[in-house]
Image (tube, rainbow, N blue to C red):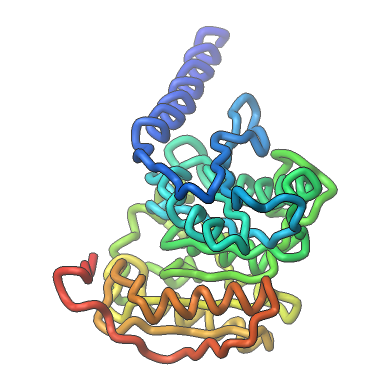
Length: 320
């Protein structure tokens, strides 16, 4: 019995160590603009002995100016990717002088299955509020953006703010995990219907997330679905999805938009015509994203229209 427990403990430690090593190995080289200061590998919480880290970008000339925050959550099917992949995006926000940017690392599904991922992301939001004074952050102006698995996690941050069963205990208890606006690029929203919809090529990643098919893990799949928690107190949403997505069904974006509209939430849905699970960052879409954050975090007045936007022509638009 003792030997069995020791082996299990060692295997768990190896998995965790491998996950951390994979994050570091995959980290791309990135130099921020000269007007941006990057602080990397800041511990925002712990999951047992596992250190959870984020990177923060701020304007070099910020001084004591209090700024809103844009939080980036990476994609990769909950089983790949890393926070380093978001450094360019958050540095871009910080380079404007109007935002602080944060990119969050979270446990991947080969290290810990659901709900570890949302526990980590919520702990990161709580850390931001707990450290608002130190970094001159406006704790009432936190936006979140993510793509694919990251789109799912930011959507869940938006609909499940302060939902006790999803909070976890990874750090800074007593601070809110709510965000003030959400940009969801092609994120899953309704796992109970995922497998039956056209374009469900991400089924294996979903199974790995739950440790089984969502129909077999129905309670977990329901709790993990952002549509489950949609309510009238949710923040504004901008949802972007490719019409030809073969990994996360286009119907998932439609379902997220419909659930929010049903709950009387301010939601805008953009279809990128001809795009797959990628090719969504066309200039018009990115401009609408900038306007969206400016409107909801800085008091901007630009309209953010929904509807269709044409995908970039090949080879720039990679369908999947």
